[in-house]
Length: 260
Image (cartoon, rainbow, N blue to C red; front, side, top):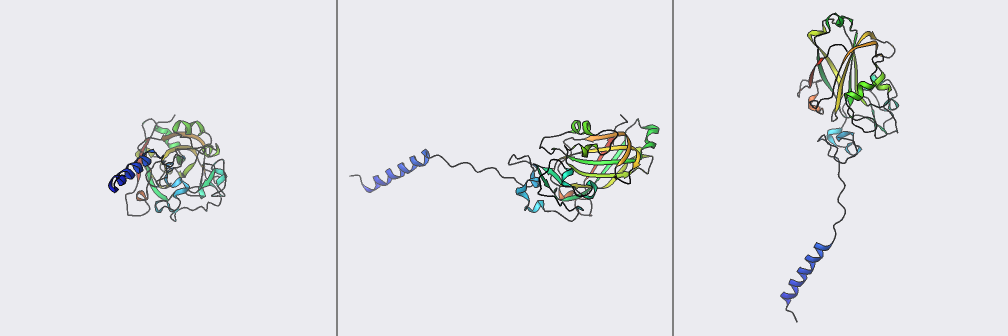
């Protein structure tokens, strides 16, 4: 008969063998980390756009949005179906994400500075209105989009064509009347309402007729444009807000190419 110490060693060996031979349980599914700018759970929703981040401190809404997002939570096929008022009246507007109307992340103000490139000459005196749009870099189907996709939809005779296409989620729309004919010296647009935590591209269009009193969009023909989807446009954070004196105000500078 084996002594007690021998039995104890045998039990330890048997337990170790069982532990090595037993299959491990299924791996825990990945969860979204709500402030790292990455789609951690591979559902095409990043950070605060993911429903699992709704209660995260970094994703709580502030008081800047002017819209009510009445249709949030309802199914959608495009962004316009998530609006109960004009897109201008929801700042930032709700988006159609993964087939559901959802409010964007925290709203902040940023500044955009522009300068006209050489080549505008006397044509710049015809500029009557300027429109600025921040467009989410994933469309309503979750596909990645760039400036080539946007400009294919942005008809030069219809300042609302991008929104009417039904494909894009517009984070912000701002329209300005061009009162200074010497725009080549540079001009700053502020405030531009933006949403934190998301990737976007900037579309600026210059129009030859004033803003419509009915639609609030520019009229006429597009004289020129700038679309920037470079990697130098990082996701915005609450610290980038220009509405207060605190923090580091986010100010982007662009050169608008000659008319084309």
